[in-house]
Image (cartoon, rainbow, N blue to C red; front, side, top):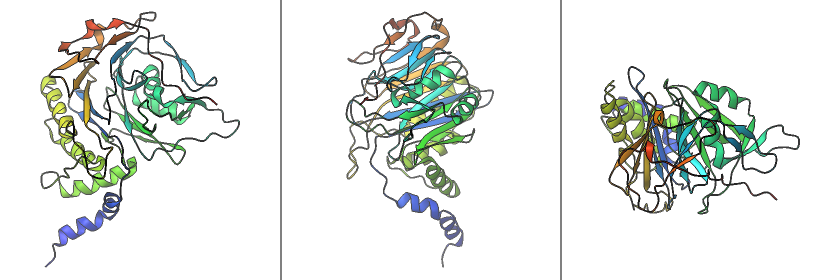
Length: 356
């Protein structure tokens, strides 16, 4: 005799199953989740998965920096309102970071990204995808502020391939010290925004509305019964969504950070693993944990033995202060608070859009 309860669950999850069984384009993978604890204990975690060495380093940027959107002579320009600590990709793009007001931005791959094709006379200004995260960190203190500004679309993002030849297909998540979140995607040539505290988790393919449908299906089953275990983006989304809410909700900061680290490690892809038929599903290279309340930015490389962090309060973000670099390439190993170890250096240039 059939299990009617299970049948109802499966029927109610028809859309999710259809999405789950649809082949997902191969892509480089990442995961992001937000821990919503009591007493404003808000922590954003992310993994960076990529097929080659990203040459990532940490940088600190002061307020008052004149910026160029790296998309030709008409690119959007701005002056940074807030200082930030960021992690680069190839020292040519901002991939992740936190600003001094506690806004966090994360760049993740999205195969389905389809960008704006501006018509003649379009008033929006171009912005290279390499500077998208930095624009957000430079200009906004909260998610609501960023969403309100970007709904007006003062710019459109222009993709550019990475130095190792990967197409510039990404989406961006942001979170703030109040626990608010937003996801920005370009789908079908239009900017799509998901805004709300409930949008705690983001991975890669499929597009975000389909990720949410998959998660709703698995919530009916319940994570204590069964969770999908592969390294596919949809499976990582479900596991991260379950575990980020299942871990203890505590005001003990050390415990909260440790628990958040355990979630992002759980959804990481083992170093050196390969997936038959999906050659671009990639190993986790590094992880970050951003403590919004204490303005502390943790970094963990999968190739070094220590976790280290930056206390943003110990950095000088005064306008006119030099940018600082913490070199991670070449086997450098750090531990503890590294705020005093940034060295003054001219800022890197954002990967520019080729101009015909």
